Image (cartoon, rainbow, N blue to C red):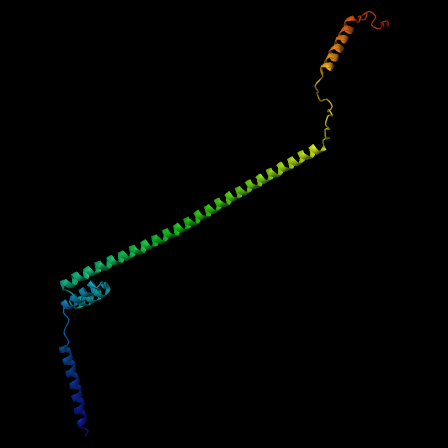
Length: 206
C-alpha cells in the first residue's frame, strides 16, 4: 500500500511538466515585427505613450532591429512635439487669461472714470440750479423791496402839483413876468452910485 503513493506522485508531477511544455510550445513567440506592428497600430490611434511602451519592450528583446529603432525615434519626436504643443497651448491659455484679466481691469477703470465724470457733471448741474434759484430769489426780494418803497411814497392827487415840478405858463403869466423883469432893470439903471469916499452915507428917501 505504501509503495503505490510515490508512484502516483511521480505521475502527477510528470503530467504537470508535460502540460507546461505543451503550453509553451503552443504559445506563439513574438518577433521584432510583432512589436513593430503593435507599436505602429497604437501610434496610428494617437496613443503615443502606448506605442512607446510596446516598442521599448521590443527593443529590449531585439535591440538591433532597425525598424524598431526608427519607430522608437519617430515616437520620441512625436511625443516631444506633442509636449511642445501642449506647452504652447498652456502658455497661450495663460496669456489669454492675463489679457482677459487686463481687459476686465481696464473696463473697471473706464467704468469708474465714467461714473466720476457723471458725478462731477451732476454736481455742476446741481450747483448751477442752486445759483439760478438764488438769483431768482434775490430778484424776487428786490422786486418786493421796490414795491414796498413805492407804497411808502405819498399818492399824488389829481390836479395837485408836486413841489418844484415845472408847469406850463399861460400867456398872461408870461407877460406879467416880462413886465416885472423890465421894471427891475429900470430901477437898477436909475439907482445912484454910492460915494466911495463915504460909503456909509445914506441916500435920502425921496
